[in-house]
Amino acid sequence: MRLAIFDGNRLGVVVGDTVVDVTGALPWPHEPDPLLAGWWRGLCRDFAVLAPALEEAAANGQRLPLDSVRLAAPVLAPTKIIACASNYREHVDEMHSVQQRTLGQVESWMMNFDVFLKAPSSVVGPEADIVLPREVLAAGSEIHHESELVVVIGTGGKDIAVENALEHVLGYTIGLDITVRSAADRSRRKSYDSFSPLGPWLTTGDEAGDPADFDILLTCNGERRQAVNTASLITPIPQIIAYASRMMTLNPGDVIFTGAPPGVGPILPGDVLDTSISRLGAMTLPVRAEDAAGPR
Image (cartoon, rainbow, N blue to C red; front, side, top):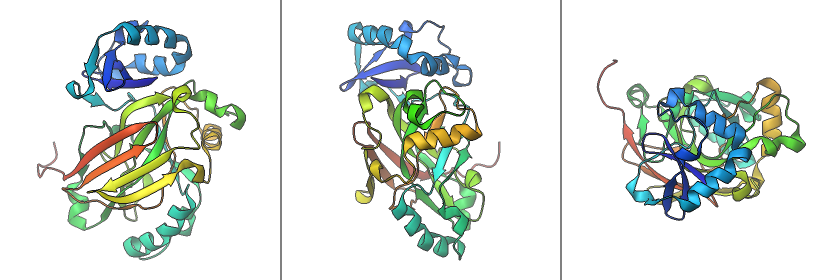
């Protein structure tokens, strides 16, 4: 099943190039305010029970053309965004030259796999702009794209076993981990508003298939930059989930970026990024500079 959030945070099921509003099939009142949208986390937790009603609603409901609605990010108010660092060998190799150019030295500790947190407020949907901060542009720091497979947690848990980890996954979506290349902490450099585009929808695990066999592709202004299969992940998804859940309880609806493939590169105002993952869909995201208005 492909789950979309659209038009006032309604829940939809994507069927071909249409979407069916299935919000009425949920057993809870619909709260459109994303900060209060406990119905979404409930859906993530209880999807196995709710799936038959959603399927029936999708089969019998009115189909709306996808181009007639506005898609939002296919997550609502996750309690946390977990991101993986240094999880493709070729990306680790390329980061030596990237850091030498942008930092003047190589931070060896950053070449090892680990996880860190991004601000949930950095999430935007597949029809939003990537907005480059004024002060970062003024400082001349490079800002890079990182197209990644993203996991959305279903039932959640603590100390999840590797062999059971995929049972805790609701599904997968496409994400961009936009990153300032500077000496600041990872979480700070990756948490600006709009630095976590997600979409175009969430494909549930049963439909998505093997997460170790997704093809990721990103182009910038039509030029291919990133192309990799998730079979190349240093730490596979079950191990990521087990590792992260040892440190922190994974809650329903939490988001995990699984790591940047090789081919990262700078983005500038006016660029257009096209990113796709096999069996999950595609997004086109324009890049622009932040407006010149002062603090509010």
